[in-house]
Each structure stands twice: as structure tokens, then as C-alpha cells.
Length: 85
Image (tube, rainbow, N blue to C red; front, side, top):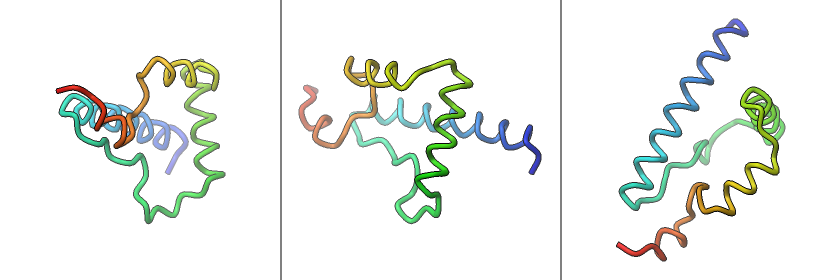
């Protein structure tokens, strides 16, 4: 796989995951995990990908924390249980 192809596949995966998470939140259901439990992806590989995504989007970890604090992150099952219908 070429570098360009890998970047294109990652961009499509990010957009599809964001769409799927958004739809789940709208339905009030638990969004899917970003990686399946049986994934062979290592923590180091996740950090490399996350670092690349943050750099590509010109974001800092601090901004992700602010976004979460504003309630815009992916909700946990407990958070979904507290939402009013």
C-alpha cells in the first residue's frame, strides 16, 4: 500500500466512523468502539495514528480535552443512561 493510499483509506475510515458515531448519538445508543476488542492494533500504533491525525487537523491534545469537557466527546453507556428522552 502506498503512503497516499494509506492516507486516503484513513481519511475515509475517519469520516465513516464519525458518521456512525453521530448517528448512534442521535438515536441515543452506544456508539461502536473505534477498534474491535480483538483488534491486533497496538497502543503504539494507535498513538502514531492519533498523532498523525492531530497534526493533519492542526489540533492539540488540549483541544480534544476541551471538546470532551464541553460534552461533545463520545458518550459512555452511563452518560447515555443519564440523558433525558
